[in-house]
Length: 90
Image 1 (cartoon, rainbow, N blue to C red):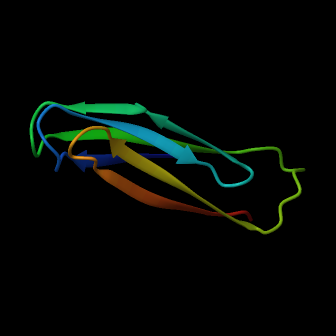
Image 2 (image 1 turned 90 degrees about the horizontal axis):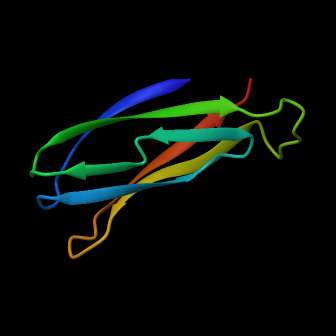
Image 3 (image 1 turned 60 degrees about the vertical axis):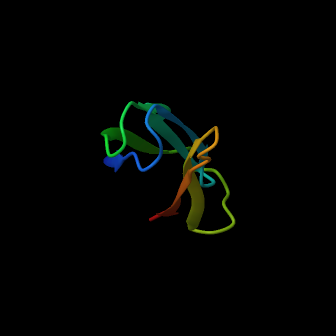
């Protein structure tokens, strides 16, 4: 499954944000692009997140998996935006 999200820069002009994914057990998570660069405040950008179920034979402790996607900037502004990821295996 692939989802597209649009975000708005609330940081400073010329901000760069890096993604960091903590994948739920049994799921591969890909973020494209993995780095977003903004030139202006309130500038918008989009990214996609693709979730791929791994081997069905993997033994999991639960039918629910949890992870996160964080976008963070380095520098004086030091913004961090965290989104929780929850998957249910059916």
